[in-house]
Amino acid sequence: HSLDKGDYRHYMLKEIYEQPQAITDTLAGKLADDHVFTSILGPDAEQQLHQIENIHIVACGTSYHAGLVARYWIEEQAGIACQVEVASEYRYRTVSVPANTLLVTISQSGETADTLAALRYAKKQNYLGTLAICNVAGSSLVREAGWRLLTQAGPEIGVASTKAFTTQLVALLWLTTALAQAKQRAPEIINANIRALRNLPGLVEQVLQLEPGIEQLAQSFASKHHALFLGRGPHYPVAMEGALKLKEISYIHAEAYAAGELKHGPLALVDEDMPVVSVAPSDSLLEKLKSNLEEVRARGGQLINFACERAGLETSEGVTHIDMPWVYDSVSPIVYTLPLQLLSYHVALVKGTDVDKPRNLAKSVTVE
Ligand code: G6P
Image (cartoon, rainbow, N blue to C red; front, side):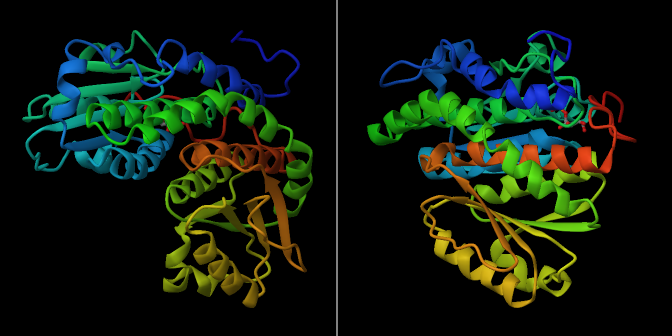
């Protein structure tokens, strides 16, 4: 993780390409063949994990999106109720904390003012414990939390977060596996996650090779002022993160919607001037998503689908596909994040913006 750009034009692109290594590093020392090492979380974690009955996740920005993805995993795989909230809201309201709740903060920097304030507030409530998921070992957040789970993304310079986000997701899938293990859920869940996590760096490498096709597609965005991102299940927050990336670095207004909500508003905006990007893995919600996409086509919307090669979506007038490899369900949100990062990067290049330092934004927001 050297601090110069090397042969890359921007830090953001370099950091996108560092993801296979960052994921490998984040997983190092955490996985055995049929279980995960929960003691790495900190004192008494092994003894206390099974007591957790609720989880509150608090974070900002991209880290908040990682939390939203994790909620789907934690509730489904570990059977633990999970809420996710932005830190700037959480810290100023009266939070009701049920018995045996774990507070989880997620932060790349570990210095975000609102997230830190949220942790300090939480420490005065009756939480079972506090956990910081963070990329900086010596940060305030890590020092002040009871337990820690470090991502090993290395320094991230680009303001738009890329490798920090995917490694947060890796850490959160690992945490889900640790909780499933503590709760004695079916061993298949644990084994499948371990297998999927081990195969992930190779898969990410493979998806990065889609860059030339995505670069081509980016041309059509340059003249647009709005874009809509659609997803379902854990790919809804992936769509949110895709929209955030586009906003941050290309200054195109982008919004994400849970595909099922399309007809409750955004469908009114759909026309040939607003590209609609969909995240379409071949999961249990695919058929539902397909009918949402037909609604878009029927209104003349231009569709760009990042779709599993097995999804059976057909290219036609106004519909572009980028074929994605088939992936295990649990790691799918991580894999589908990559083409959206590359899309926003290439749209920003076409528009000629300052990719690594977008206007008005800071890498780390240490004051309120
Ligand atoms: C800023 C950055 C974002 C980041 C957010 C939270 O807005 O520009 O990329 O997601 O802060 O930062 P953190 O370090 O807490 O993850």
